[in-house]
Length: 226
Image 1 (cartoon, one colour):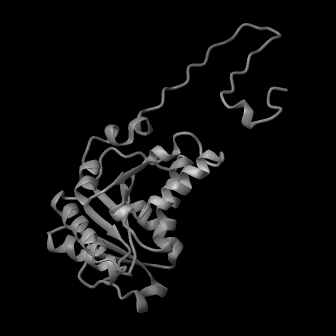
Image 2: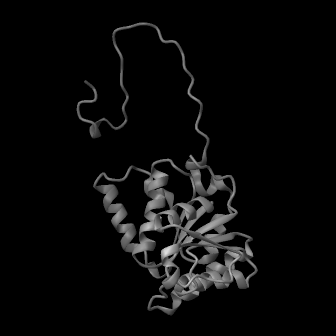
Image 3: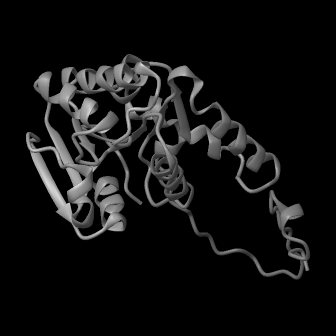
């Protein structure tokens, strides 16, 4: 499992569309400036249009370091940013996701479309599978992610998410709150997710014919007691 000791680079999921609401651009610019001011490297999708471009330009204007990751096939129509600190060209969209996940110590999602909605959910799924302990934040300006959060609550109530899974999501209302969360002590941000797991102590047990199983979730596993 990938553990986080401190946050130095932040992978931000957003799209090449600006959206209809002018405030979304302002939010992206605020986040770019805030990351640069905090000395946090921005990792993003590499385009210079839409919210992607606004985010990257604001971070660069603020003196921040910016890494873009662009699939080779998307270069012609994503219009890759030419002024970045670093631009990585990868084979396809799957490699892009993997590389962005690898480069960031934390994940932040801005409001956007299908691709952006998919990416934070995938990051959350990786956390659920204990592939990483990286923070997952939603910059929820204008309550954009409220329907998604309601869906996740519904999935939990239906038994498709484990208790505590939704606690992995940190919902923020502003760029300043995002940076405050990312620069807080890791244990404070992640809570028990970042706490070290105790090493099991193995002891030789006396022989016997009766055993007790304390499953904690037996109702989900019919017949396990047998």
